[in-house]
Amino acid sequence: MKKASAQGLLESTFSPSLFSHFFHTITTLKSHALNPSTRVRMRKIFSKDSGTLFVARLMLGLLYALGFCAWLYVFVLVAGFFTLDSSLLAQALSALLMSALVLVSFSIWLLVPRAIIGYFGFFAGLLLFYWIGLSFRFSVAPYLLGFVCVGIGLIYAALFYLGLYFTSKLYRIASLFVLGVFAPFSFDWFVPKAWLAYSVFGVGDLAFVGIMCALALGLYRGGARKIRILGSVAILLVCIDWQGVESMASAHSQARAQITPLARDIAIMQSAIPQDLKWEQSTIDSVLVGIASAIDSAVAESKQMIILPETILPFVLNDELSFQKQVLATLLAKSRDITIVLGAFSAQGAQVHNSTYVFSNSSLQILHKVILAPFGEKIPLPDFLAKPLYKLFFGIEDGLQAAKDPQDFSALGRIWRNAICYEGTSKAIYTDAPKYLVMISNNAWFYPSIEPFLQRVLLKYYARLQGTTIVHSANYSSSIIITPFVDDIGAVRILSYKE
Image (cartoon, rainbow, N blue to C red):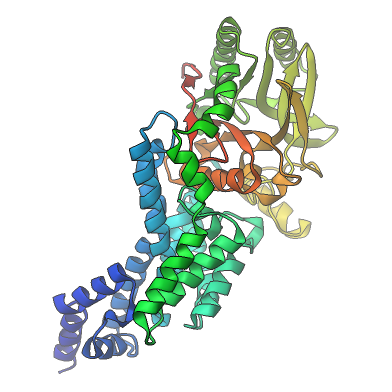
């Protein structure tokens, strides 16, 4: 009898009519689209405890999470259209698509049933940040990859449970805003406002709150439906970045005016050096040959600056060993003709830094990373807990050291803020709203994954928010110039090396 009852409940749960109503709810973004009988059936599904109901909730949590994160996976497909090389039509359609998907994502946050918020949070955390675990492939404990991924899902299940505990839309608007500011373990890549970076909407706090309020108004179940819809649309129109739309419609004139001189004067290198081969001497020797060749080619083309990725030289470059001294001497000599920016480690006494080396006119400036990647470069725990973990998981005594304040250098008649990978996506590095920023990254830790695309979205967000033009050179992802406008421009210079 129980078996037949469970089977009947399962059939009821996944009946075509129920999912037809459910699909109508999601596509129309109106929770009242469910008729009374369907609401009763849904209530039964989420109020009883059984293995069947667990699976139903799990699957619904996954479906909601897929809708919540769809904007990022679609961005992977359309990212190439947000460049000066794309047609205005392709760019406009891509921006509208991203806008619609982000609205769907925010609406799902407001609508997700309380009974599945834990499952929803778990899968959303995985879909957005599963790639963090991939870095453990290159540690002394690669078996932790799966545990890390599950741990990420559980952390976001807990955070989303708190953020969605009440069904009040005002509460959920506030909670999503707070979660976008809160950085668990110093990890600040969950920034819902940033999801608007490639949309037609503004990226400020007011635009975000306005969009959420507009959606809440449109999704409200009360009367005066037409008035509510008109009010919702009116608020959304106010939240559009009309200046950016005008820039798009004027044939990218603003972006071209700022990007073209940089693209003409700077050689932005892109590399594809596997992380597991990075430290081998044969790889280092080949990379050095490729760097020298790239510099010579840039000089021959009258470039004024060349930028290479983070830790392109994976050793302490300012060491007193003869090999390092020879490399430094070669780069200093070549800097008479061009400014060279590249990533390597540096040492100050017993302290080791992840650094940017700037060679110019036979002189050297070393700028250190300020914001270290949590767990990858610095375990954000007290020393008595962190030091044993360094030894256990990474085979080292301590993490890298960080500089105290953001650092700048001068080149091409401009002041450039220095940023190394993770810190380029952190609010603190944009103190004083720098007009220009050079960022170097090594994304081989997470290849292949969606990480470079989420990184680009965050960079675009800060570029638009602070009015900063970002020149980004990366390993194992696209090197690019990101502007405060709709348009970006991709780098086409590939660093050659032999495995």
